[in-house]
Every structure is written in C-alpha cells, then in structure tokens.
Length: 115
Image (cartoon, rainbow, N blue to C red; front, side, top):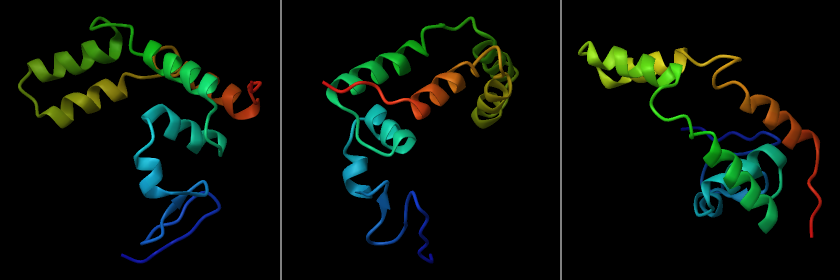
C-alpha cells in the first residue's frame, strides 16, 4: 500500500488524523474521535458529554422507524444481512436519518464555550 497525505490525515507507519497519531485516536472514545474529525480538535470534557448525549439520542427510535422496518422486512424475505442493512440505509433521507446533518453543520461552524 502506498502512503498518502492530506491536510486532515496521512497513512503509513506514522499515520495521523487531525495532528493526532492514529493509534491515539483509536484509543479515544468513539464520540471524541468523531468530534476530532469534525472540529479538528479534541473536545473538552463538557463538549464530550454533550456530543455523547447527542449521538446516544439519535438511536431512541426503537424498531418502528422507516429504516429499521425496511431492513427487517428485507431480512424476513431471506436475504443476506448486507442486503438488509443496505435496505435500511437506503430508507434514510432528509426526514428520517438526515436531521443530524444540520447538527453537524452547527457543530462545525460554531465553537462551544469552554470552561
């Protein structure tokens, strides 16, 4: 595999993401790593807690939402798991699953006050 580099990350033995060693990023909490990718900096303790809450609240819909029903319906037809997951992903759109995109834009454009 050839190595590459962008303004955000690089590959190879000394791979970095947003200035952090890839191995260190892999040891971070998932939400903190996402924050680092989106904002270009590690979150404060308060930002980490808020962002973890935001991500956790995005899974509160249970098994009755459109993407879950689509995936379950396709799976019940005897299809492979990847086909069923794809059906669920394809059911996402602006009204279901896409609302978090606006939240991402807000997080990218504004810095939360640090204490």
